[in-house]
Length: 209
Image: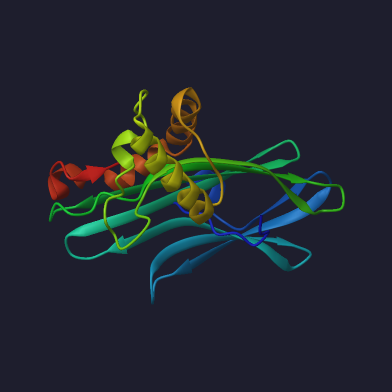
């Protein structure tokens, strides 16, 4: 897994991200710096530094789309003991009844060693997204179906393989998926509410959030 990683998601909690902060993790000082980009894209980042060297870029808020559609990425992080948890959430809406992807959530965990190195521990995700030419993947209706035909199983397997590579993690289903979604939604609930509160009015029923 690459150490320089981009993660997707929205506005930080005001309390956590109101300014650049320095946190000591396993005795090592890390600086979390905010960065905003609004000339070429609407995006907000946290850059993680150790000894003035940037080691991770975390996208925390990003919007893409046009006058009738929107793709939203939201993200945040938590520090628990010697581990850094990165959370990601995707949602999409389209007034023209075409686009409702990507949609999903992810949790990634990195351990901080005494040397200051970041070691990837785990990355789990559930993402409904396009895998080619912005056509709805045939596998999506079968992802959460218990009894699949041989053909459906193959489509799901091929889809998961592509998504795991694109979104950098292990695709999970069933109870694990439900647990992950609950955790991500709980951590990002205020950001999700704030950034999607107008979606029903704008997109009608054609959104996935």
